[in-house]
Length: 235
Image (cartoon, rainbow, N blue to C red; front, top):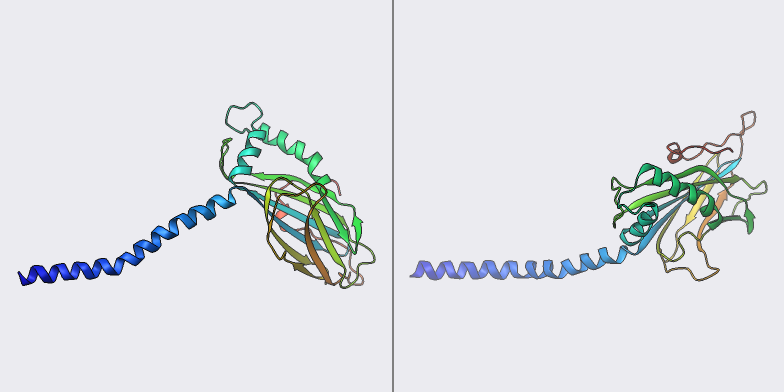
């Protein structure tokens, strides 16, 4: 009898020890689901600016989460058969190539710098060719001549009006070439609400040291290595 009582006491101690853990798991599961559900309505915008003596290179890397990925996949699926073919992707990107450059603007020291497409847009469906919710990635490549009068403390501002109806997660990175130094200024709040008419998402990069060509060497600019997979356009 005493052995049975002791066994019952041991089980009670074990149950008391694991109850808080079970409660924590139960509380944690809704939080995880809520966080996952929150990001389904977002598009992540990752902006990379690279400045050399001749060119400013700009890469806008977009990741579409479930809700917006599903919308774009349905647009890609021109024949509405539920599957996205290579020809449908090519047609989709061709349409984007004519429209999206109008929605990205670059300013340096308060003056607009004319951007031009550097490579064709690059699409990654993440191995899922179905017109259903998922994730996918779209990369846009631009370049512009480096302003001749670029000075220390001048600021580059990228105005982004891509997918204005979507909520946005935002990051910005910068790279100086040819002896130049840049500083990316991360947004105070990395989340943007949908844009109102006339608004733009602003990404800012400060020039700490302008690039300088070495005497006696060609004034060349090397573009970001992430661009090599795309087809180059005339530059």
